[in-house]
Length: 198
Image (tube, rainbow, N blue to C red; front, side, top):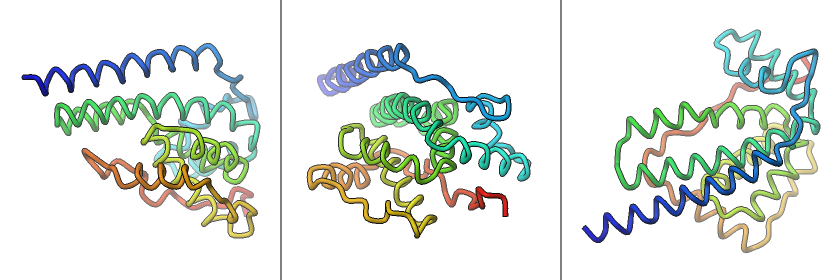
């Protein structure tokens, strides 16, 4: 009984903390950029389209927005990472795998991640900032994965020389290794594409 109270208190503390941070982020949300008459959020939804042509067109549009898209995407990523952490903590307490997947799917964290991947190299400095400063395991794990993917698909990039402080390396390693709950909720092999349209 005591363990349940401690777990419930921990879950409530995470939820209250996430709510406070979310309220601060909502007040300070960057302006959403527009490209070819469509808001970034519309392009992000199209990335997930089963129509390959629409998906590629959306990825190219987000890529062309480049650094203009980064503040909005990072703000959205940070908010969703807090929500994803709360969902994972709830799973650790309840072990309801179906609820975990249902909540993660409704969060649409993968759409934001695909948007940052589509931006590519201009997202690296902001992702590095997350790796250096965040204590959120979800944010650390996903940001680490995105940096690895972007640098692997852009070998000519200066970002290949990305170095983190030893403190950040320890936190990122711990976050990547600490996968409690369903471990398959990751984006597997995002569609490689040529953002220039060649």
